[in-house]
Image (cartoon, rainbow, N blue to C red):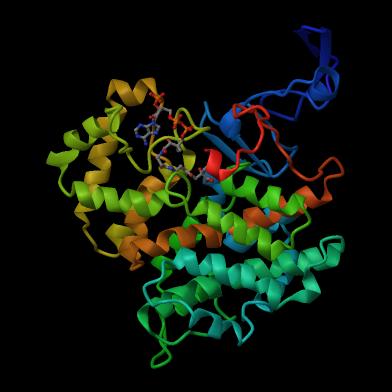
Length: 428
Ligand code: SDX
C-alpha cells in the first residue's frame, strides 16, 4: 500500500481509491470498492490494463524485455539451471540446496507412471486425433484416478497433486505421440533426467535400447525452462479462474491446456512453423509481410507480437541461439531457419512492425528446433503444455493460498435488449 490515492470524479460525487505498489513494476489502483460505491464497472476487454491478482512468481518488464522467475533472469536459468530446479524454484520460491533438489527430483520420479487403466482411455481416440485434444481429455481424466489428492483445502493433497501433474505430463505427452504412431507406450525410466526420460518415452521403442542424445537433452532442457511460466497469460489466468471455483487441480490444468491450444497463444508455435513452411523461400517473404499488414487480410505473422513484450521477448533470443546450436550440432540444415531469420530481419526493419512494436516471441523459433529433433508440428503445443504445467501448478498453489482470492466473477457492459414480453409463435 502507498499513501497515494486516485480520485475519480463521478456523477454522484468524488471517490478516492488507494494505490498499491509491488516490489517492482506498475503500481495498481485498488478499485474493489468502485461498484458498491458508484454502481459503475471498469471496462477492460482482454484485461490489457487489469491486474487480476497479486503474485510473487514471475515478473515481466515488456519495455525492457525482462523475464524473472522468483527474481532470477530467464537467460541465466536457461543457461545454468535444470528443469527440475526451475520447477522447485517456481513452486517453493527459492533455488534448492543440492539435498532439496535431490529429494524433489526423487519425489517427482515416484509419480512418473500413470494408472494402467488410463492407457485404455487413449484407445477411445482416433489415431489422427490432435495431441492437444488427447491432452485435454486425459489430464482432466486424472481427476477420476486420484481421489486422494483432489481436496484443495488440504495443503498435503495440493502438493501431491502438484507433484503428480509435473511428473505425469511427460508420460502422457509421450503416450499421445506413441498413440498417433501406433507404437507401444514406453514406461518411464527414472534413472534418466526428467528431460531424458521424456525423450526415451517419446522416441524409444521396447525393441531396442535408447541412448539419450546429450545435445537434444540439453536443447529440450532449455526449451522446457523457457516455457515454464509467464505471469498471468491467458492459460494461467484460465487455471486461476477454474481454481477459484474450487475445481480440483487436474480439472484446472486441463482447462489451461484447452486455453493454451489457441493459435493466438500456445498454438502459435505449430502455426509459426506451418507458416514458415508455407512461405518456403525467402523470395516469398514480402508477399506475406504485405498480407500481415493488410487490414482486410486476417493473416498474421505467427510467432510475432506479444501483449506484454513491446521491445523483444528474451525467450526468443535464447531460442534463436539454441536453434543455431542444435542444427549445427545435429548437422542439420533446414531452409526454414533461413526463412525465419530473413523474415525477422525484414519485419524488424519495416515501419508497420516497428510502429506496432511487433517482435519475434517465444513461438517463432521453437518449432525449428522441435522439428529438427523429430517432433511433428502437431506435438509442439503439447510440449508447451508439458513445460507450462510447472508454472500453472505454481500459480494455482499461490492462488489457493492467497487469503484475498475469491471466486473470479467478472461483470459486463450489457448492450442487449431491455425487458420485453414473450410473443407466442403464431404471433411472430
Ligand atoms: C504466447 O501472454 C503471454 O505471456 C503468452 C505467452 C506465454 O508464454 O504464455 O508469451 C505465449 O502466447 C506468445 C504469443 C503467441 N501468439 C502469436 O504469435 C500469434 C500472433 N500474434 C498475435 O496474434 C498478437 O501479437 C498477440 C495475440 C500475441 C498479442 O495480441 P494483442 O496484444 O491483443 O495485440 P493486438 O492483437 O491488439 O495487435 C496490436 C496491433 C493490431 O493492429 P491494429 O488493430 O492496432 O491496427 O498489432 C497487429 C494487430 O493487427 N498485430 C499483428 C500481429 N500481432 C499483432 N500484425 C501482424 N502480425 C502479427 N503477428
